[in-house]
Image (cartoon, rainbow, N blue to C red; front, side, top):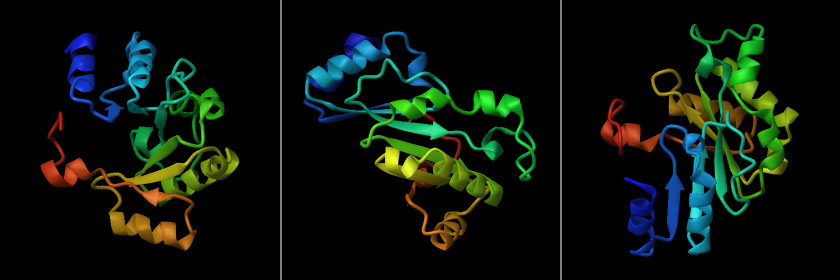
Length: 179
């Protein structure tokens, strides 16, 4: 669909909330203008992004749901808790985005192992995320960490956030796209 068709399909029926996601929305050059148009029509706008692209052009009213890639999510052979490469640090997240987060925003981590979980705790503490954002979300990597396992770890530490299951995978399966 072109932009005008998306706006028409969203605004004409009076949809109160729009979530912009799919691939990496920030790759779309016209995204900031599109978000502004939605906001101007009193639509609540969520933007789900991988976190590696600059958020500075995203209107402040947009609720940003920003993914921070964990070492296990990006490292081919998983993460054993060893040294993190400079390549990982350059590609997993665009650090200036931390200064652009607002109290209504959310930050999400997909956890692939206990080492990822521990890394996530340190990242949250180091960057004071509990004070910066409204929600910290943890998702278990499907097939690598069970939801119950992740909840157990969260309870051990009185984790300052909530469990975030990828519900579509439970409803439609792992390989279904476009749902």
